[in-house]
Image (cartoon, each protein chain N blue to C red):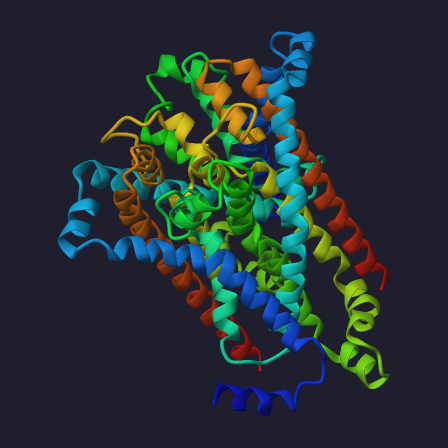
Length: 284
Length: 275
């Protein structure tokens, strides 16, 4: 039946290369993505429910969920504010060095996470450039959840900036002109006119930053220090279990991480899809 | 025309805060990498750089990039052609599947490969019997890097090719052009920049991947060390200058990546204003 459906559809196909590109894509996706992911399912199927439940509710692991979620939430929210400010400044104002600042926004994606990790750990250590200034104030960043949040925030900087920036660029000039001529103050006009317009992009960017932060590993482990129950993130727990050759435990934790990120990604895609539909529906 | 936030006081304040934060959170770390690497002088820097372990880490990193970038380039182009030029059942599913590496923690990526090819894995016994070493050797590093970087080219091409539509290619078909000719003469000139950008991103990630690679590498010094792994190892050994020396190479590559991206965007903007 599938073959029939395929031939029926083929009649409408004008361009060549359907078979070849389908073959290559499916082979690649099966070998590189699906086959390894099935091995995770295979490993998990050897566990009973109670064993699985026991593995994923280990107290040390539960503490790592809390630290990871909390730090990722703080990182994502800080990025929402920072990203909105940067997008606004880069779109609306002209100033010397603007092109350089714009290019720097992508640094966290271009810089390998391990490099970001050792750099932040060095900067914020008690004798580092920034850590030295914070220590007399009683603020310690290294080996605390604040450091974890900082590292997560660094690696996910581009998400909010780069999703909000194009939307802000497309905002028609009449919109804020209208608000201003009606006598609204800057703050009110921004909150009531601009923010609702940017909202979908802002939520999408913040969501992506959150997902990325949950999974971040290389940038976080150096500044976190990995104290059990305090500064262990969930990705690190998988790593620790692997070093102990506890494949079942590692797989159980991995399944939680995988399910959470996929669910979040799906939610973000649905949210984005609805927003795009509304936008086009409004226009047509 | 008055726009929101155009008052000089507001503008100066916002620009000032934005610049201060950019310097603190982005520029300062970048400067720190090079400052730390050169802390003991340029001679020590050169010594660390020309050390046999560093050279072999550079070699392995290049090998990984040289294999993964072309493979993902070919896959990305075929996948983008498939999902933007044809309607078929499962098209959306395929697009969602290639997003998985974006969402998954790199450690999980490493783990699933370990489960598949490792000693106790599904293929492990067979590989062992035939004396093929994949895990804790360079093929494993190449495989996880393929996994981690496979979405980049396709993700750059798909929105562009969808927006451009297939009218030009269909016209070429009616003129009797072959598939390869259509791609080379009609499609490729239109997607050139996006393709290049996808390749740059793939390369940056392939060279810099750490989490996934550290699971499958086993880090035998001078054998399965890529540059990011070496950075970690030296740092854990309290050899800060050595770690930042290798890190500075990766940071230089990151700067090149940013420059290439800026150049591509600048050219695209200039072409847009020209037409």
